[in-house]
Image (cartoon, rainbow, N blue to C red; front, side):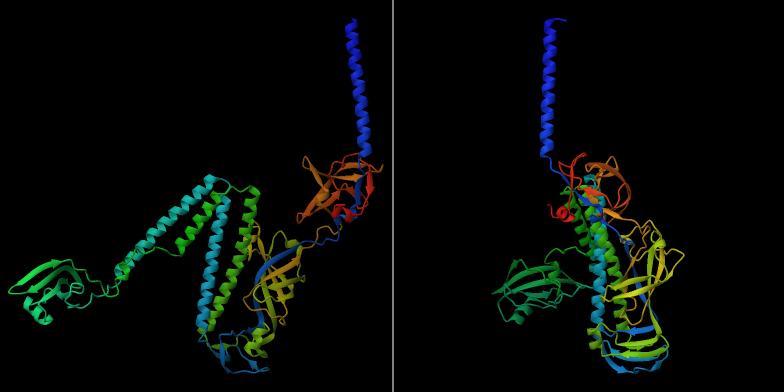
Length: 528
């Protein structure tokens, strides 16, 4: 081996030894400066004692062996036929009222229902637009489709208006003769009724007159010939431009072009405007999903609001149609109160009872069917009155129903089963009202516990945590997880115990082999 090669080998080895020494020194410096990682008791960052999710259903109220009567502010009772404690038979009159003002309330209820339906239709179309917002091409296609609908409806509305105008009888022209004898106010005469020119001079008493000879054909005034007649030794003629007479009350119709508009056209215009807005803005996918969720939620709310508005309309219709209120069951009048006092206290004005209460017809998803039981207590909340009370599940159906009361906001791919809830008659629920029913689903594993999601990390689809090992140093440990709760907690099935100490898994010092120190959970939440 030559001396040059030996020197090169010595130099390389010297550099390697020096680099290793430097790396070792730097490692010692880094380890000396690295802070111990805080570890917290698992019991302080987990949740136990979870007994199941709360679930909601929605349903309508019916009465069982009971009749509650509410008198609105627009109704004035004129005659009362019963008293408290009196027995009545179905069909017997209870009282009579004057419903003069009910027609106004009926119209308001009709308008309110139509407004809700229009909002539902608009929201559904906006949701469809958001589904199409994944690409500009899809939005443009949707816009073109709506624009064609708008054009077709515009032409149809214009045709309807033209047909209606043609079928309307035309107002008559003013009766002739009409006007004075001056140029600014000429005399209009029927040309066929004028005998001779001398009669016009005689009628006016003037020697210089302005006359418009009008040709009348049936109900139409056609030709207008304006002539200035001057009488000297002879009669001299000079023609002038005469204005045509307008039909009586018809001048305003021809004063300008009619605006073509209706509710359908306005809805289509709003839809095109919304699509244009989406096309002019580029939304990320998560924002589109958020907007879709908001629209879906509003559709569900409107579904309930429309049902309630429909119930209110039927009530107003009944008030307007019938001045006499009849007993619907055989029973006893157990309660009577002046309407103004009853309404102030959200109470009925009269109750006929045969010892009954309320039944609520709700539904339960097939996914929750195994978590509810007959005899289970539920919470009932009235949307219209705000009354909150307890009920009991009295029956769970075996056959699925066609639709869920609130299907717009739930999973439409599952079946729904009848859920009958009994409520005591002492509560002030109204027949045909829609209510929300809340109940707790039974937990599938009462021993399960849940760790806060912020303490868990993912690697290649697997979940892991940093815990203190037996040697007091930090170690990375993979765990088996289960159910997610509200996006905040995750069920821990294996790999971690309540007695372990766990680290917040982020930060430059959080590495395997790091030293640890015990800390209170308060310092984690306070960022200390």
